Image (cartoon, rainbow, N blue to C red; front, side, top):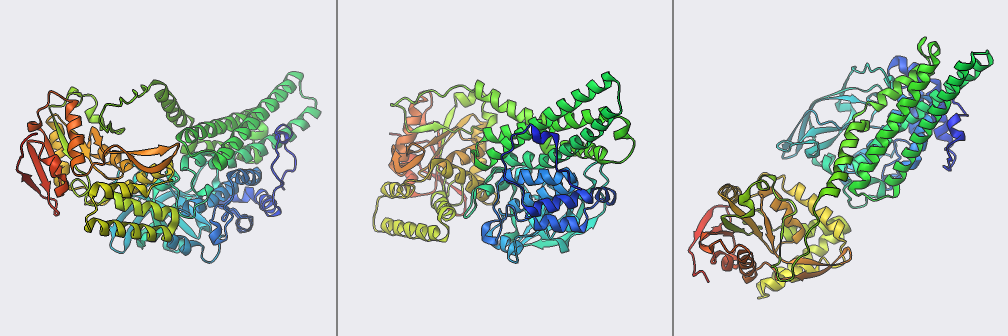
Length: 633
């Protein structure tokens, strides 16, 4: 039976609206069947049905599919209520909600596969990369085993994370949506706590997963915005992860406090010694303090997820305070457990089960306080010790050091005083695409959907036609950048990172011969400068990959945090590249242009190629052809 009074309720100023009747019914069922779920290592069918009816599975499903697109604060309240009855039921409920949020990162066709029949689809997931994924022309071939898949017995679909071939780290993995029918469940869950979650192992024999049922894990971690995604779908993974994992523990701790308080009140009436009575008073007050503090921290984290920024500082703070909340709940329940003595340790019961469940939740990787403290403190110390940038001198050329200088350049004196300079064009010289037009299509399709893509194609077609009729290339470059008028800087830069991350995964994105040449120059003590008229936010991303020290080109004019569409400085087109290269050479008077190198692919690159002693033309098939030196004037 569900408890209707809890000591913590008296001390926390809870202004949340009353819980829906369906949530209360699910909580009552969870409490009534908690012991059975713990023994059977799975939830009861009635509890699962009531949790689904209460809206947990649909909580973050997009409204387009009939979902709620709910808030983190309301989910915290509902999960806590269920957790007071059964932490295992609350754990499955919150994960079914969270995994629907994950699935919203699937392309439209993938979402349709999941929710076309309705939003109440239970999705289990494993976000730890495992198994093997191999790309095929028709999609992906996925196979392997994934451990600790909570609620898998009752899932309709699974989201499984697998490493992407050739890409290192969790952020380089992909999530794959797989129907439950394709999965074999191996009974492997024998945990001390959260026993009722049935977090068994999912086994998948090689199965074809179409492209529309997969998305990059990096999108989820970053909370990458996308067409039609609402606020709840653009929250970075670590901003909300700890909050959702900790919510069941809050409910379990509150139930432990209520159970312990009932026992302690009876003990007082039996005339326990005065010193023991004082110990009970002290334990109750301190544990209530811990749980109230944890609840306030989690409510603050939920508000941040619902209405705060997506900045790294908020992500790190939420990780810190949710890990702290987990520690507080462990401390509070541990104190109650020890004080209760034989009452708690004499056998299975509510207090003993709550103690096991809270400890198991707090052991989750997302709630480890040491890891959260490490990343938080590193960020704080870094912000306090990084040198302030020097103001730009108005007489200096239109160039800037790449903010992502390759680490192996930093310690060497040769990177600070290079023996020669290497000037390299980017599009179709270093990478096999025209990055500016491609990114323009990507961004406006992201922002305006099909209409944005259509308008971009019209703009580019008109620009190419005018070029064919004699429009100067530098003027065409300015026309291109005017398409970015009124676009928000932060969003543009975020999408630039997203486009580059996805596009650069292709094996042939970089031209191997050019990359190898730049690597050789760096090893010999040369400093690489990218000289390009492409869209400026894209260039530092390429510079980081190839270890370039400089990016030369025009800058984007801004009005506040919005682009004006105008360029500051000379476009890095035609003779503009020669001017920018000469200005950089002027900053290195010890370097002879005859000792320098340059790489380009187009006749408009010749002014830059002709000013150095070693010039190379990159042909359409990626091979290198020497260019005869011109007079060094």
